[in-house]
Length: 271
Ligand SMILES: Nc1ncnc2c1ncn2[C@@H]1O[C@H](COP(=O)(O)OP(=O)(O)OP(=O)(O)O)[C@@H](O)[C@H]1O
Image 1 (tube, rainbow, N blue to C red):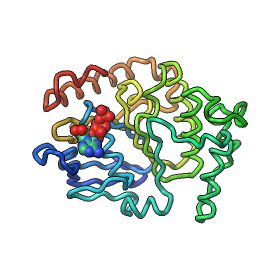
Image 2: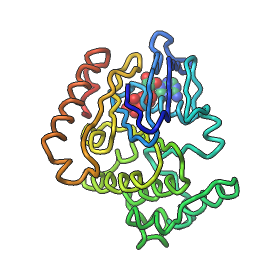
Image 3: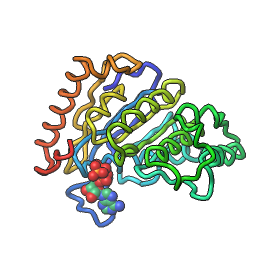
């Protein structure tokens, strides 16, 4: 399992989840064991339907599970959520359409402050995601990439101990994705946040992560946890170097064997 230099953030043991009406012979998740260290950046990757989003939702306390244990920093998911310790960035950002970019970032922070939690300076966050110039605009006046930046800045602004990101860049073009990856890493590196990031992109998973968790389908399981021993920061030299390419090949090989262990033939199309 993962070497845990800063202690254990997420500890999952024997997690099994079947949806109501789902086939009990093929749970969405079966006997998932996973350890994620504090302040680690970990990606989940695997064939469509292998349970990545389900795992994220169980960790977020949004789905219950049939059996097994999920511990977040020694608490239950619902306790950590109640303490505002968990942030979630979905595929499509849910912004308040009648509020400006700045207000979208400030508002949840104010609500949180009333709940006793601390937040970050919105101007620092706007700068970190390159949105200072459009802080006065409304969500409908932004590009998809800019909207996702607002969602990411807002999530970090609440200073969550754990940030869960479900394919946040999947609707964006590759050039925008590259830029957002760098901004995301910049935000993460200066903070004490543990990130779990779902993606279908091997390159994205390797570029961002300390570990890549490869999942297999039918039933959803952890197939392999691959350490990504690339130096940080992940600058242009690092992400174009031979070690990067070797790690991408390693993740692809693991996905191939995950697929052979249970996925359907068209599952790897998007890889
Ligand atoms: N609300 C639901 N009700 C019933 N079954 C569900 C529900 N959500 C997901 N499933 C099923 O659970 C399994 C895992 O789905 P999940 O969305 O977690 O997979 P995923 O790996 O995130 O897929 P993708 O990569 O396509 O987004 C799939 O078989 C899916 O059909």
